[in-house]
Image 1 (cartoon, helix red, strand yellow):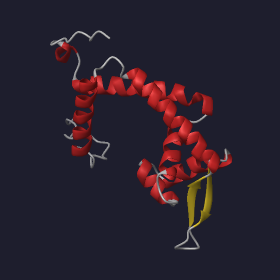
Image 2: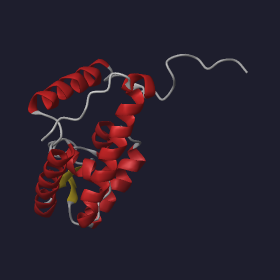
Image 3: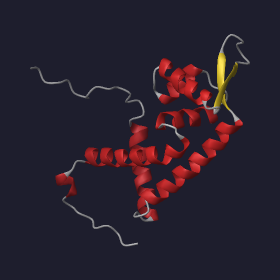
Length: 162
């Protein structure tokens, strides 16, 4: 596959931030389309993955991992439970508490979703060489790791006074 031209003046036209955000939006739109056959939202798919990869998490843990409010986690898990993809079970350590686990149907759907996501990602990144993919992954992991604690929704500098 021919390589895309390398334009040195791209940085002049678009900032790295804009390029990353545009790419992220494109990936998200594709992911929404990929999820359509299962009638799941990206939020629901992420929650299903969190439950499946945790050992019977409580709703609070799910909310933390998804970085959403506990009430929102409850709503997402309710929808997954209504579809038979998750179920609430007693917490073995605290009988008053409830945990969430995936059902066999949830594990089946998750496996299909993971395959669909892998296929879509392969298609999306197909124009990059293996070396470019490796380099992109390294750079994005470096940024993600460096900013893992940046959970604030405010600019790094105070807004100018009116």
